[in-house]
Length: 77
Image 1 (cartoon, rainbow, N blue to C red):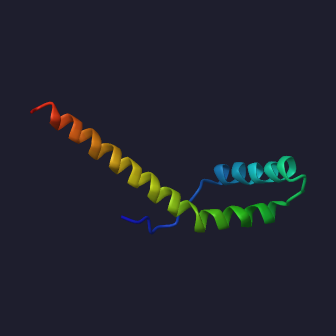
Image 2: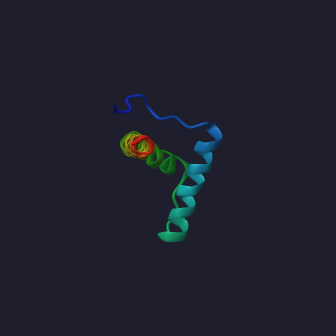
Image 3: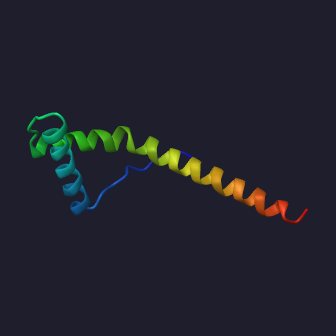
């Protein structure tokens, strides 16, 4: 099952993530990045990467639950 709906953030969480991007550029790259550029970078990650990460999380959770269910059923044998 693929996640088809866009992943959204609250305004507060979005602002925090934009600040994190700006801080990353300042500390790791010694560059200043503005609010607009950081917001656009966040939008890119949210559009392109977040769905893949979400889908992997769902897959990993499904696999874990399926394995746990198998372990539970082995008790009955």
